[in-house]
Length: 150
Image (cartoon, rainbow, N blue to C red; front, side, top):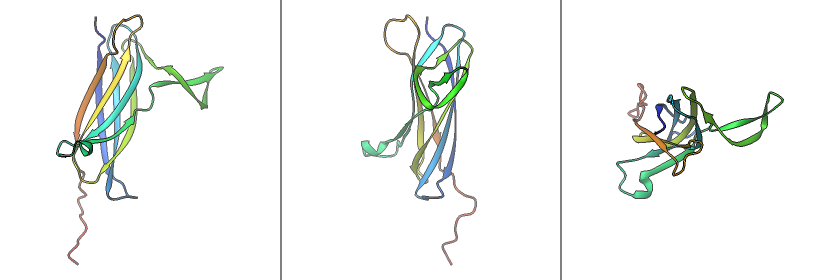
């Protein structure tokens, strides 16, 4: 039997005030595990894709690992902020998890934001199942455009 998981993705796009040639797209991904079995997250990533580009290298946009797929180190019931764990995060049946990060993309260029997560079940032989989601991120135009005619 397969592993079921619901994936919801939200984005918000803003102009980078420090570099107006790029936009910043904040990405939030919500995962909700189905009713059967536990799943351990192995990897989670977001990337921007530019379908209008003819150059295959430019079509592939920036990528970023989603933060939150590893457990936090703890000692005696306290989070150890200066220590990184390599233990994979386990999602139990009906659990929810939220992951996030951001991408920097060219200003006013539409793109597709794609999310991919790879996980595994305990005692399952074979490959790692993966879930994907994508959505379009359109440029965000300010209501007040600068008046260049002066």
